[in-house]
Length: 373
Image (cartoon, rainbow, N blue to C red):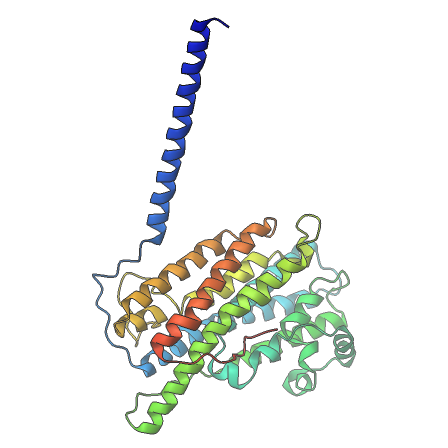
């Protein structure tokens, strides 16, 4: 190769190397900029948060979160009862479209239930409502026995054990090929819906006025500690029981076998996770652009912390909660890495709540009703 060609080759290589370096630097700058935007704390500087009493926080959660979600679930259950009754009157002449409509209404009701039961408090905790209407795993032998008994009304259903009724029993029956109108299975399914509706109707979200005496102060402190632990337990339940457990079970499967994911029979896996997260997120972050008022809105943990002057804790809570919200919107069971990202984000949030926020609120971490193995 002559000297001129050697010079041209060296010049070309040098130019190419320069372009590679410039592209690499540009990529670093863009990544840094994106990270800076993502890490930028939420700006609430123009929002003046008042000091919230513990009673105001707890009462707002009962009235504007749980009671509101209970009413929404009641509406969905009423619609499900009507749909089931109509389906069961068809005497075996049902069409696939009828079943699809019934399954769709079931899905709406169950998603409403998941949002309500994400953080278990008040009468749900006292009456063990989750066990009553969402006991898992379903016991098929007990379900078959219950169908043979054909119980009717509240008195008949009270004799049926939780492992043979509730949402899991209805979910199973709606996926069976022999589930037709005019059958004992269909009649029992309608009784199950009515039984769930009665249980939900019995939830009474009473609130307690703020009191100044020492006994009430202790009760409010205990109430806040319980509430905070249930909130932490809810993040654990979503991360571990609902998401990471099935993720690990499917890890060695060839491809993404949707049949191994929870609620996949109705293609509800990601929607179920989103509903449960919504029931948690509503209690963590301020969602609007105005300061929440206890008599009309939920006082989320962020607002409570800001009212206490713990601004840094509140900012970090929003950062970690927002990271979970972003990850949850990207969940796709055909892409396990997306689920892993959500699990990681939830674990970071849970760790922050357990350590820094618990310390800031002077509450101790205890077992909650949502804790699993």
